[in-house]
Image (cartoon, rainbow, N blue to C red; front, side, top):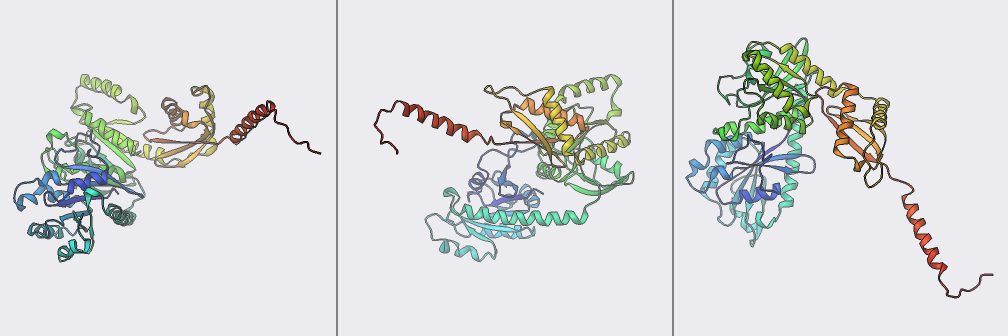
Length: 470
């Protein structure tokens, strides 16, 4: 799982300052991704063991308006999505009535709360926190966000909490785990995700209207297909920023990222009538960056004329050239056509992602690829590749040992990836190549020899008289 942490508090208590410090940037999470909104800041909090998603609700709360506007539906949605709430108060202003009212609302969520007493700079910590102990929050920490005071202690506390959240989530997943893969249905709003889930399950288990954004949450459902078990994840869609107006739907982006994170196979559903959009490509990039096995399904295929189908296929081949290894199926979720092909492709890519690759076979493929096409000389020197072995499955990790592997160009690494994919027929499964360079045991000796040679040359011209040795 990816823990989600929401920063909440009155205006001007330091929410955005803390957000910028913890994320080391003012940029939103995947800033070029169209589904993210301008009125809420997303960021990655990098911890030692795992990362978390940090949300600054400051843009929503604003600097004007009464408390009822402060705790509006969008902030409530942000809090409901979070696993942990960072509640910030102002030590300079002291405990305010609005702080008490916000705390009352937060307690109704039953979410863990960490109270941060900000702006303690120039004040005695114990004195500054006296008023806030009466709030009755067990976890409380004084900080000065502007001067980064006690931020290290805050990070330690967040590390502990996130580790515990991940452990609890893994235990919960183990109890509900099936023998088959976790299958995430990914796609923009209204491409037919819920319709596809309902068709696969044979019943209306997921809310599905002919209106974008009707699926609010990611739902995990057990699925049996042709005698095999799966866990099906249906996510709310991701729509373009200009079309996002509802606060609940804005958080579907986080649900999508979390669904990708915990899946073994992703089905990227596209609307054949609309063709391949930039948002579709962004989603495919997210899946690829997370190294998940993937199948692309073009939905509503039965609505297209034969001429339109040819146009879509041509456009698909052009735009998907870099992802030619991803299987493509044509389906109609509404009428159920193509679903057998879809599930066969799901099994295919899952088998590819979990296939056991033997060391001798990997090394043989590596040697054949190296002999057929050697890497370019860098500074007149050649990189040598010796052997390869598996570094893990799902995704397939291939560890390659050699010399000067850090000098290999990206194009040559892509060439090796294609050779491994072709040799082992790894359709739809990402390949992660890891390179390790062997040290040259003679490098130091050569340096010493050159130095001693220089000394001998110097001594040859030294006319200083020396005492004879008898």
